[in-house]
Image (cartoon, rainbow, N blue to C red; front, top):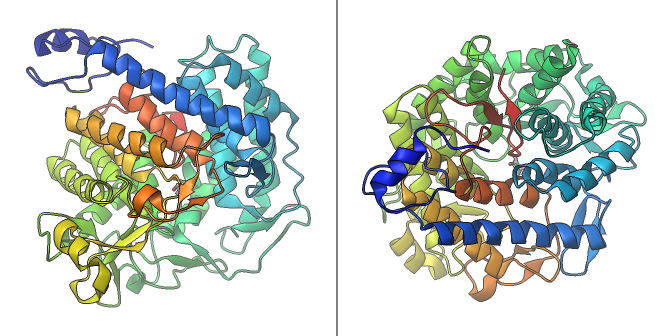
Length: 510
Ligand code: DMJ
């Protein structure tokens, strides 16, 4: 880890010295955390990560996830130790060599050709394949002093290839659009006729990276062929506004099967990856950037929506057949981060300012609940406000459709981008406040549990499940917001050396 040449003189100008904390764009006179407070936050975050790891290790390892109330285990992700693999890149960034070695030792033992369960191509790609590739990129790059035995590090790439070789039959369809739900033992699938936009369009970064690292082009080719149908959508009616496309693709033909547009779950990370591929390689993926720009502009023009009770707030609506849907999700709140990343790499203030409006809207879904944590889904249709939520709608600009919180990262993720792009301390405080609330309401004796109702005292009751993305995403974004400048941090402008996959695993850019 190192400081940027910019950060030290600017810190001096601020008058409040915090040499161990990253300041992406600190302005003179801007208040910053004092060093001891900053260090104490970093220690608190590391303690929370280790608390979750210790509980997982004691009660659930090598299964996929901890059941943090009953201290049992779950195997929702093929039973290959999803939490361990998902935790790897965060443990590397935190410099925790003990946990990193434990995880790699585990990965060495996994047989990716065996499982009793249906395998999701998308989930397996974003968590396992990406977790290993990112570990490889970090441990052969900026963290190359963390694991002594470089042969162990090579296992990460070998196992990535093994896994992709097991999965690649998914693309063996008439169009090349893959099946998502696979039986890897029989080489079968669920006989679906369509595949979703996000699960089709969130493979290309991982599979391209694998090709670049192995020198074997087949993985990039497969994923880019599938992506090609999403970049040039057919029929024309499936693209009601430039760049905004339908939600499902016919597996036989590659044609879109509908024109339902949103940035919500099911579509979300397709848009996320358009701009991230450009960050990965602006030369090769210029067309992806054009598609992101078109989608971003159309979203500002056609999907931006303001609650009647809080016209100051901005959310992204969905659209279908001439009608706007005035509801959104926690998942959708990655959108602010996507606009901020696109805005900064393209040097476009309109995208940045719009991204900050989206970030503010999602922040309100946190700041206006009793727990300080935002709901799984919410609406702002003035004609559909539930009687018992009229006061909330009047004050906060949204009502809750599902009050669950299952340890999702998207709101914190977008706060992180806002902090990195603007350097405004307010965004770091928002990350910290969210983390404090999660630590308060979700923490159990062995880890972290989801909440059933973020707007009830104590969060209602708790879900006995700790999703692996708690390790990969929530803990990572909170840590990165408070930790030193480093090569893997998101940079303002064009200087990114790494780009994060949708599960927050950083890949070295081409
Ligand atoms: C994660 O697996 C990824 O962030 C994905 O893109 C969306 N769902 C979860 C987190 O909510």
